Image (cartoon, rainbow, N blue to C red):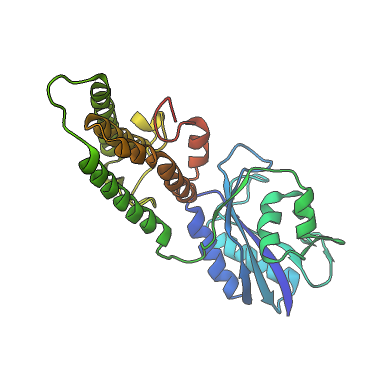
Length: 317
């Protein structure tokens, strides 16, 4: 049995579905020993194209390297892989990156892969699951990774090879509900309704609440059927880049924060103000997780994120 490190990549069509299809196919070629996390990487070389999803799967197989290469190409072809442009976009790319067998230098195949030691999108997942894998005759993956320059590779998910119900998104929603309840209790305990003349703080609070409520309402309407309390996108959702989403990537979170902050100011609740402001770092963390799921779903999200730099509140945060 020979141990092979297979590099997986996709930047065309349903990228995650293509990688999962490849994972199932690899299981038929040998015993799957390790699966790396899922990464997103900027394309290297070739024409302008969307970012890749990448991973490495370690397989132990009794197949000869050249036979394994043919079988990998058969899996690629089943996803509609078309080989027209060198380094062009592809539904699926499967490369033999390394092995613990003899070095291979053939016209159709080199092991280790001749560019493995130069590519962060190969080295990062490979070093995660097999740090001692050779990426050059005398260079393991872990050592090469320390010397390679950053090439825009981000880890998006630890588990990706099969469908699962993510618990972190439900945890965020549960904490959010508890937080809202705590703010309501705080405002009820130390807040007061205005009597007589309204001071400046309450007037400013009313303006903030109106702006926040409008932002959250318009943003929710713009999402339409894709609206969900969970940070994972619904299966039928599409990426919205217009309206408030042209100014901030998560305007609902910003709008809700402003609305609650304004309400706390109206009732003159100091604890409510502090708790509502603390929503900003909470929503930042929730949106950080949400953006990883959005980047997995939408290949164009990386460009959208680079274009729309405000995260929660248009023109501010």
